[in-house]
Image (cartoon, rainbow over all chains, first blue to last red; front, side, top):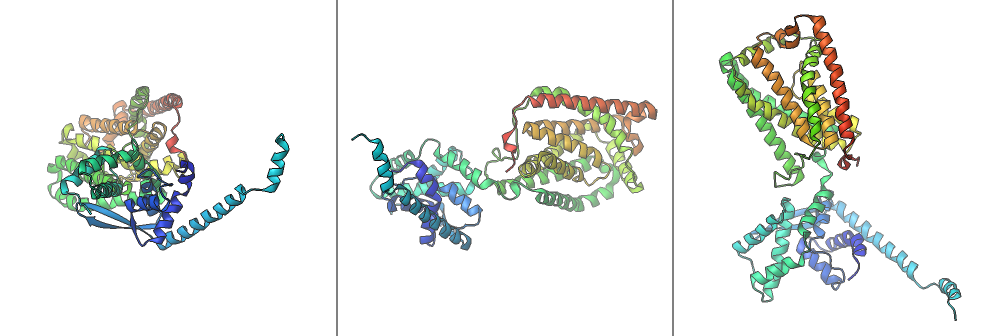
Length: 121
Length: 357
């Protein structure tokens, strides 16, 4: 399990990515998909996705479709054209960020030499 | 795939409601979420009771409540819930149309019966206000996506220092004295005089109890609409001075009456300032109720039949010099009491909710 801070910043992108891969999804399905695709490593608190979904809807990035399932209503979320471009933008952004992070944490000979100065042999 | 029965779904819905979830779409989302999770567990052989308990234990303590708060915080800052100046003007226009439409039905009835229906006119006005109030609440409820009336964020009732009441009550009384003087400077048309005289003749027959619904209902509508919704919204978008100015202006024109414009404007600014400083509708509601009560006590008591008789204090003193001196004095005293009120409120912590977005 990754720390909360790391997940928090990428949850929006994760949701947008999932929705751009599917025509429409409902809340529980999204939570399950996140658990499955990440092998349980990213396990958000059960209901954490809902505030984000409602915010995206209010901003016009998502549309909803209500379907009656027995005694309850299931709300399906899907991306609007505006939401689609936001999803692309967010996914690219996260990709770029990961690349930068890769560079940042990659072993650098200079750094090692520098640290070896301080280590007594 | 197991499907929950009607009773089982109802049980889960009750659990969600008991946890305070009242946002309609979120309620549907969470109900479907929990039902789906329970069905998954039942598919692998668990009983409903066990499955339900397992699913609920997956939620952290107060998680559902927090999710609702977060949803409202994220979604809240849009649309009419926080109206800007233009949207507020739209709301006033809507109020005009509503009053005009109900008047279309009511006025012919009043016209036929003249003074004999005086009592009913006031009751009908109360009814008009009730309709407006219900519409305003319904609209806010829709915009806020909030099912529970008690939780609607337009009835801001927060504690305020009770000592300001010692200043507010005399302010209303003194205001009643000097504002009559202000009104005497507003030019009056003959038509308006005739209308006022006719209304006064009708009021003369009514007992004070007939006015009671009006005394309590009209301030309620005004406070919820002009302070609880408009001012609250504008305080987040403009400086406090601008927000209080425009909410007061809209309040002043809302009664359609040029004669009452000035004193409504002044009370509007006062109420707006009180709301801004206390974040509570109670003090400003009290101001309007007391002002209205005072006005109606004057009318019922003195039974004026002519509009000139509305200048109670000038008529009572029977001398313009005396009256305008008294008016000037009461104005100065009002300013002093306002300054005292401000001193009391300055000692209160400032209200973070009204910081600019």
